[in-house]
Image (cartoon, rainbow, N blue to C red):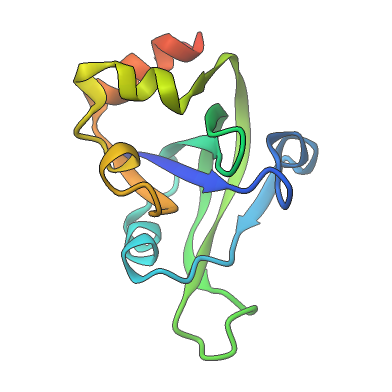
Length: 137
């Protein structure tokens, strides 16, 4: 199993909407590196659901339920999407400031490539972030 972090603008798709939907498409990705990360996802992989924009914090965990397939909202047919389902909310949402304050997390793409919307998270960082969020690893 691999671990990921997926950013969503809370004004467009907040954690509450993901929870209400249960399973939903993760569409609209138009960056090649982020798209390649979507292509690498496998059913059963988990990802942190991260609010970008003003809140910038980990809100919960989602699980990939459908692997990469074409995104119908892309008229050029260059990009795709995955389906994810909400698993559990963070007991304590983890703000970006707390992530940046933790030296063991400074290597993450979240810190080094702040504009990337879908990124891998290594197992040690996943465990640490899960602990910070009050989630079982």
